[in-house]
Image 1 (tube, rainbow, N blue to C red):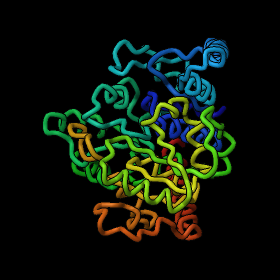
Image 2: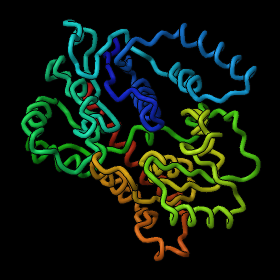
Image 3: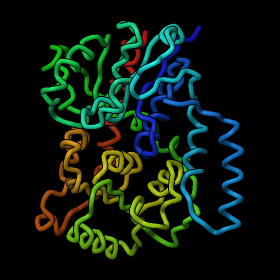
Length: 354
């Protein structure tokens, strides 16, 4: 009988979150496990299909725009568990731990104290200690606030195996528990670009001619915009702003993949924006994020990613110093590193879920 693994992750309308969820599912299924994602509410597959059809017809008749049905259709690719665990992890079924052999927490910022409403369910207090595995989990910060240290120390100490997504995360685990946490790549990097392309779907907003992707989760300064516009002109391409344009509200995870597959280049302040630039071998530049005070310093995960693939020169810290920035990279070298990292993730999974 296949070992049963329950994925516990963030479940939200966030491109990186949904893509990493799917990637971890497929990675574990490929290794022969029975995998299901545990949501915070029931996922009704039939209802989603019917609602999606109705909404698609409505949008076509009215000419209105919406992204919601694109997300719902993508979530049909996720194998959802009948088990429900609310974000506060209260009122959990007593026998939930009997329905799985292991729980896989990750990836994404499941342990970010600034997003604490996500954290309780990711500590797996409803599971036995030998069922608890963190797969490329992320804190999203470099330090745990003092008021959370005791709780985090107790929770992390109970995990049988821990892997994290960034170097700072490994340092936090070591500091709090004395354990060595292995640093793995994000699950999205465990799938080939060819396999991602199978999920790609052209948006109703059809780019005409060449385009570049602009994917910023934070604010965009005037200087950033001027730099991106200049580079786009040099490429003879229009700019597709994934999150900050009315025309792109109908972009969900599958449409996002399509854009990356066909873009000339990418300009991002996003971790997963950087990841998909690397996966699809796209010239790219990474900007420091602006306007996210109160959520902690999230640079560690991008720093680890760029350092891992020897792409530190793609980070833009000073626009005046990168006038002649070469956004291309050595695809063959990056692919060699990626194969090594995929083997590390596979070996960790064999050890953690056996």
